[in-house]
Amino acid sequence: MEGPVRKGYQMASERLGYSEREGNLAYLASDVALSIGVLFRPVPRADAWKLFRYYKFDKEMAIRQLSALGLSVEGTTSGSTAYQFYEEYKK
Image (cartoon, rainbow, N blue to C red):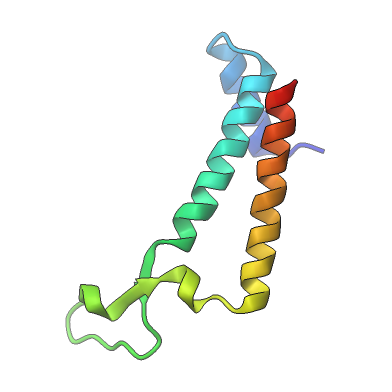
């Protein structure tokens, strides 16, 4: 089952002269890259407060605020996406 975003990647790929496969690869690669980017983005600490703005030492990586369950769910879904990328790449 394919969603509208994935179909958009496939259509854009075909319009650029590539196949549907390259659209799928671009979609899966961007999904994993965005997941990793979100995990390592700086977010305010739980005990941080601001007067005008947050400073660098008021922030930490988002992955540090995840619970063990949240981290395992994120790892499972990103791993599944990476496996789909590998399977699509082998074709």
